[in-house]
Length: 313
Length: 294
Image 1 (cartoon, rainbow over the protein chains, first blue to last red):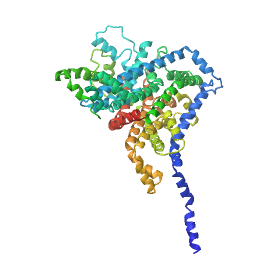
Image 2 (cartoon, one colour):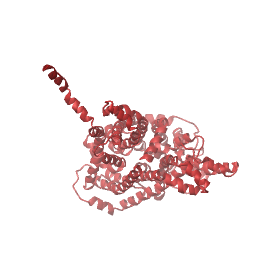
Image 3 (tube, rainbow over the protein chains, first blue to last red):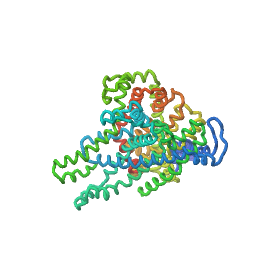
Image 4 (tube, each protein chain N blue to C red):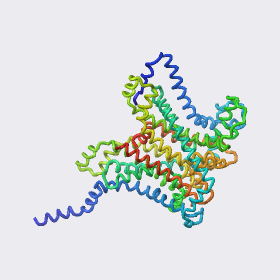
């Protein structure tokens, strides 16, 4: 009698630590952090830490191979007095605002067209997304070829189909035209994203409301303004704000087409930061240029986050 | 898909008038969009099948069609550049970083969507914000970090840094899918004695497979397309990815050979296009989920 319980205890006690660990890990609050850990480690090491490091770099005069000294806000002051930097600020805002407006209007137009019933809709939808799917650098390289100073297909078309006798535009060689081209390619790439996202929004527009309005005598414009637009407004806002973030911080498109030239007319924050830090070797100064994007980005992200929160409530 | 307002157009005007209206306000604008959006791809294809002679010297022929189709540009590309090496690198890096990001994203998405714990809403916000941090903001300090770990000029520099934008995206997308799985299913399993891991692994994850496929194709295309990190964390030709290889090596010559560059661009787009063709519905679903649901 006295032996048996002891043996039982032994039997139960040996696996106890493991069981206890297992049941500890099974607690909701613990299990959550265990499975979140891999994601959090990556994000802390490769985003949070570099962000802090980036702020530190921008306060030093670090050069390519030399360690830097703390210089306070010198880099930021230098940036503000730099005429190329001033040009960069203007370019970035023009690039972002003009491209976003066109992407929004054209994307909405394309979405409205594709919301009509027609044959081959799925196929066309798949093809429309191509500019967005294909690696940006690879499609930008085609545009570069189409803008080529001597073999431009655009100039050939102007000459042979529209009897243009010249002078032929130097697409990427003229400062103003180059900025237009860069913006155009950005629009070309972004319209599919707007169109397909807005199409998803349009499909939630209530058909009953639409018919009721039509019976009550509302014309197409009124129906669009009072039914379609209010329904898709949340999607419209989110898509636009996302696009603003991506366009504002763009790099590859400009890097491939113009490298910021001619005469820095297409220089954006990202490309100028790259030029200063990695070509010019002034790492600290380059880091400070990139950081100028931060306040604007933070503001847009704040707005996005508030909208999403409002929607989910 | 709701078939929006076809009837509304039909009721007014004659059938003929409707047709004219349809051509003017529907087919012509749609065709214009398609031509502008797709012409560059046509041009890419056409250029890659032309001889250099046809590309640069024959100014009389119609440039929109190929006079004498040839594979010369593709052969030259394989012979003269390290394209095959770049292709292999890109595949390896994309597959590895996608795998890492999917595992992390599924787990994190599940935790944030299904579990109640302290700090959940803060972490959800933090992960969302990190999705919107552009690569261009952090590339300089990140280069220091990569060098510090001894990863500079190795594929691991990219495999470990791509998840910084892939994980937030996958997490965010999958949270939406996990939220739609009914709680009762998992509760039943837990009451029957299943561990939390089992409940997640056997019930929630299988039901979120469409979301996981969306995340997979997004992550794969995003890592295949990435340019900035690949440009600055790699330096030797043997380590480069396709986008960097094309811009830094094929353009290096005084007169870049656009035939070869277009051939490379076609080949570099094909894997993404194939993945996309198979999963287009999931891609669109992900795009709309991302934009609509948040």
